[in-house]
Amino acid sequence: GVMMRHVDDTVMAAYVEAQLGARETAWVRAHLSSCPACRDRLSRHEGLAADLRLTVGQLPAPRDRELDPAEAAAVVGVA
Image (cartoon, rainbow, N blue to C red; front, side, top):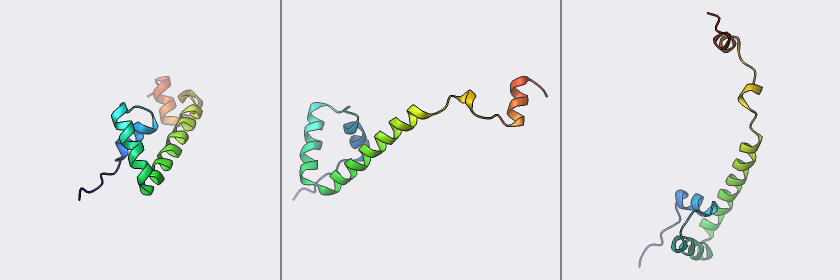
């Protein structure tokens, strides 16, 4: 028989971000309905995507971080 092709990470990430075409989306959904392992991976991808969105929303602006003395000297232009 034909070996079942699993959803690779690139496709899974695109699926989570709703960036797949209709045919690929249908294939991923059909595969997920019959593959517990890929369903488990999907939930991890969804968690990662959510974490990433949270993290990106909370990154401080670069000017908020402390400059070390060398960087500060470079910014001020002191040799």
